[in-house]
View 1 (tube, rainbow, N blue to C red):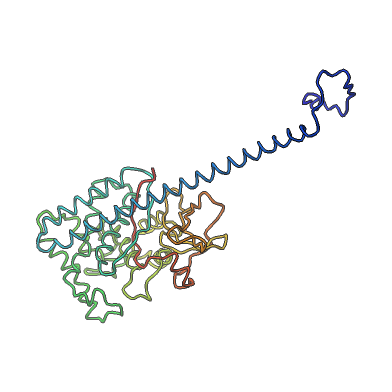
View 2 (tube, helix red, strand yellow; view 1 turned 135 degrees about the horizontal axis):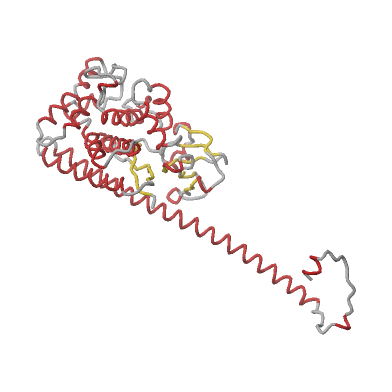
Length: 378
């Protein structure tokens, strides 16, 4: 029959008396067609089922990665807490512990070319110095890695970032945590944390000189308007310039005055539009590149009119982050997570959490403390 169709023959004579094969009964012909249709449907169903199973396994794998990343972040935070509690009375032990923590983090960062940045849970408002120091260290290392720093340079960078604000332990908490604008005398007192930090570092045997420079200079700005010495761009240490960008970003996200706090998307935009004369343009561009247009921690409106929270971004797929979706039909603990790289969905805009309906905000639980950690995308 296929050959006849291929030849373009429109009709043929058929003499059933000359045929050795009897025609199938009408009901059996219908059954054969039904079986073919059933087999076709079974094939399509299996394909859909296989695709669904792949999506489920991918989501399960991603959730396992996030849980493991959270555990490593919590362990690093606990080690950071231990370092800070020992720095006054057992400074040598504190430095040794910090170096071991940094060795572990840098080894992980350098183990794979494909790194994903994840949003972590920042739980305690009274441990800001630990969250801030670790966050600045992670962000600075991501910048340093993109700049091609060696493992040794990344360790220097990370150590300096962990201790850049150490002088604040000598500033009254009423000033450090004040949620209204500082008076001029209070601000002048706060600025002394660079001096106090350097004084403390100078009492510790083996404290790296590179970290001392960062402690002293991390509030210097390229145009000379920073403190304590009003240094300009070519006078500011290279590691300091990296850490200054990471520090500025984290400070914008966690400003002491609640009304001044910016969501990550707005913080990046502010730095790019208003601060290019204050910080290294190269370092700012790198920060924006690996954070993505919509950094983890940003609430977003999607092209399908749904709302979600960006929870991770991979440097190889900046426009396609993983998004935790608001779905009232699903319990919050089982909220769907979609990889935009697998969907025909785009991010339309960022949304400030304060503009969300209460039920959506409670479901997505956008973090007041934006903390980051990373893992390799193997």
